[in-house]
Image (cartoon, rainbow, N blue to C red; front, side, top):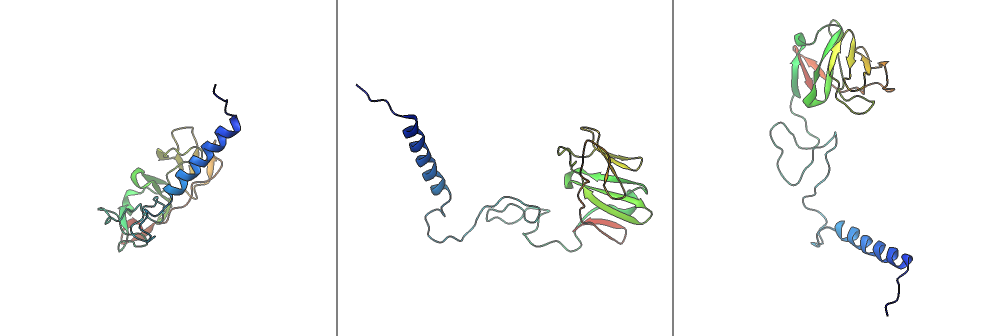
Length: 162
């Protein structure tokens, strides 16, 4: 007749197997070098890499193209308003003539992309949060935090991301 196995024995054995799998998964592939091409997640500072050259529009980590990527001409951003660049996840505003500001286009409430800039506010379509074009502070909730600033440069009538 079979002997019953305790719950503790099953959990201990499962933990040992999982620990071994994690240790093997974190190894360097057994080449002993520890260097070579590594894959790392994308961060705002560096794109994901896997030993490949950057694709069009990307630059290697730590490098920026001369002048950055053009978003729009200054004439495209209305005074007292702004324009959303959803692909770049940035909104550019012109609170007063000749002053341009960049902010994240991701709402701080639940991560939706803002949908419009009207009547002096940047507006999120998901839950109705509104942010002031002057400084991205909350004009109406449910968001409680302002939109984070994004670096932009303005040169020769062009607004660029560095």
